[in-house]
Length: 370
Length: 246
Image (cartoon, rainbow over all chains, first blue to last red):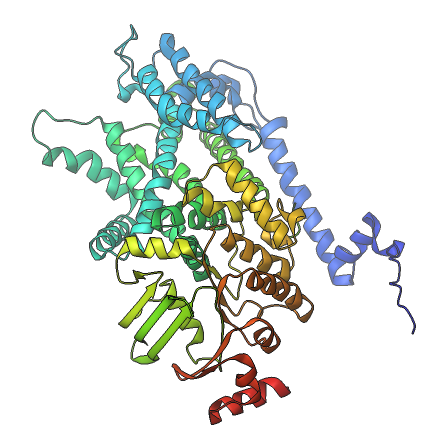
């Protein structure tokens, strides 16, 4: 009887690994590939050079008014951003009170950063801080009117402050609401199901602008005299309900993907509906739809610019508002302002996108990860 | 024979208009090992899934340890906590480690402490011979290991009855034995077992009784020796000739 010994593994041939081999295989494999590579490379150089020239070489960096940005060949007009920076961040929030906004931003970051890092402990305490204490603290600090703080009316809020308040409220409210709506839509109880389907289809079927208009213009007509919600609060509710309808459908997609066997195994172990949902179904379903959830978050973040329509000035709104300032009227003011606003939005959205990829990898329990 | 722990009386079930189980009468005594076989679509899986009401029957009665299985949620909870189930596709929870899979029910249903549940789970993982896999995720285990985790998970509820729904059908030949070994051991310890399987060797070795089903009916039931050597019904003979000679 012969015995079998497995063949030992050998290293791969050297011409199949390393940068040169990679470039040869991916960039210069054929004549056509080589031509396309060179063409693409030229295009990249051309575009990068144009952007670099506009943003750096031909740009103005210092100055106090429009005269700084009227060179013969004029690039970006950065002094405009510098001069208006406070307005872009805080809106018309009074100068003397802006430390309150800073404090709210800072205390939010202090809670958020450890929350986003999976390996940092105290998640429960952090959750209580972020969802219980922080909203109340932020409201008192921003709105004032108590603890000796001067009241700052929400009509004076603006810029990035409004963008973040609307987006974060929308994000925080839409996920739990969306989960409940998605569960309701799959419920066996006909009335619950009908209500959830009705809610989702109505809010998903109308443009956000309509919802905001309704919240801001129509709603007060139906409310009795004397009862009047703040315009910002009405927008917050409108945005939260709107995005929860989208979120519900994203979450439902995840719920549909969970095999029937998972429900059966949970039932056989004696778990009831809520325990099954909370321990077995949602953790898997939400993990599956992280890209969709973040997609909705990003969409929501950018949709906050629509609050301009009801007279609230978010970041983009306030940037546009300052285009009308005659002392900064130059040919490059608009484009510089839009590039700045775009860059700020992009930064937030890109951060969310990267974080979602990180979480997907972190939560993966495949054979390949351990 | 002692008093039956499972009593099924004139039970009928339909999927829509399809009459999947017809006038099933079945009594299972405490400690009895019953193997159910039959061609696919004969209703054998549906039958054992009715016992813990993963499928609801429409006519007749099912009684498990004296508790009637009707729409009552309280009765259902009581029955499910006494009946463990192992599935063909394992149905482990992929987002939890092996240990978490096993401690889930003791902690959340039986209100045991974390430490108590973990001790129990480790004991049972030892019993199914995979104590060193406790902190892995199901996706990192082989099929045979996963099915043994599923058995340990069911045993963690400390059930008095175990239902097996084709536990080895999704496994590679080399892994079938490791699962069957665990099941034989369980049988020898006196667990009441209902097992849907095509493993005739297992049936011969441990079963007290073999039931053959076709078209939603119990065609024949007998002790394994008599069942295999001398099947009474023509349909049973045909089935056995196909299963045993391939």
